Image (cartoon, rainbow, N blue to C red; front, top):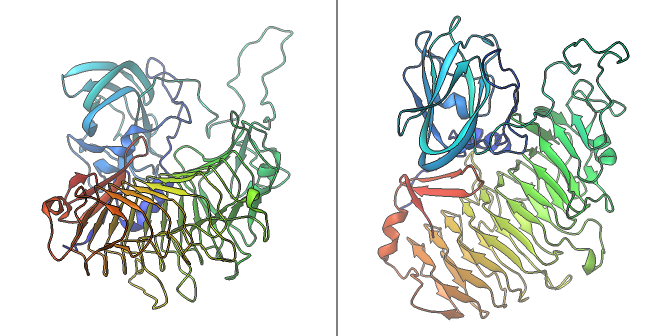
Length: 558
């Protein structure tokens, strides 16, 4: 049953492109409507671009272009029709409500699109018509396929992005256009329009920014400076590109938002910021991004090649969303206390890691770098949802405890995926690595974790292992397929097992605890449920952030 893995993240692509696709899964706003055409408004910067979870086709495509280019979050790729007119479409497997679209033209062809129609392909109804690219609103419509039909153009159109949204247009955030408003004719007593300085509620950061810069789009600042200046409820927008650091970026304890006004670090819509720490040496002190504050929301970034963890999450009530940690020299994302000897009431609690990926993290001794590591000094209430850990040198998820620090808070892992851990994407392995999908404890310390709705596939040792956690874990609705040793190994404790499925195990499962007939464990042959887990593994994130896993092209739910 072990078959090739097909990485299909968001709109699809290769494993190498997958990380960028997660971080780019935020909509890009545009305000380029022409006279008589689309509104110069745009979708909200916080809206979800539904195209990223769909598919695309069209009437024809020019040589070197692709239908998929209109939903890859990359303005440098595009679709062109074979002639001067044509159709490009976004489609979904199920009915999806759409109330606006945003047509973004590629460089060198801005203004080429002339007249157009937006059509509900399901019924043939025209939803809108006009001229010129930009943001287009219409009555909210439930459909499975929407067409943008170019009926006239000047030259060859180039559609870089065909964005779709469930809500209509709103006042846009600042764009990459001029920062001074278009000139008007004000009354004589009104001064000429100027660009006001940015408030501390919105700051812009770029790889070329400087600490002393104002933090406007035209004059961006640095991430380290913005972190100290942003106010509760404010947002730091990171422009795309690679930021190269040799020191840890730290959000210190006490630098907090509130429950109703988080501090945000967001990728600029449609762009992919990469925080690169390759200049660091491998050392436990050399984290990439250390989050010691509380009520922060970090979304859409890539953190790579840190000397230790890519992200250390040490505060409370934070959200890490649509983020990638990769090629770091310890666990990609770890939850642990910020400083040594911090008391238990300062251990990180109530954090949410959602729609996030951690892969190809590897340390020099090959035994510490996990995908996600809520271990050793973790408070209660932390949740991992719709996350993916793959090709890490040690474990996918590591919830290790030891007697020196005692029990950690119960962790919830749900609707997540661990595969190929113990082997890097380039085929590299290390004999010292544990290579489990989900490692749930350590040193006979009982912690009542919740593990539900997850999949473990083709990991180098066990799929799910209690690892000497003698607590009462709730282990339900999980599937474990084709792992090298046991799919489920629980040699002690009093965990409760319900509706779990095991297929093609390397050895018979070992279950100690409360288990009933709803489970289908592996004892040498596959049960009836295993037929749905044949074929290549694929995975993607739906437009709402849910993780969608497929085998042989079939969507599976454990």
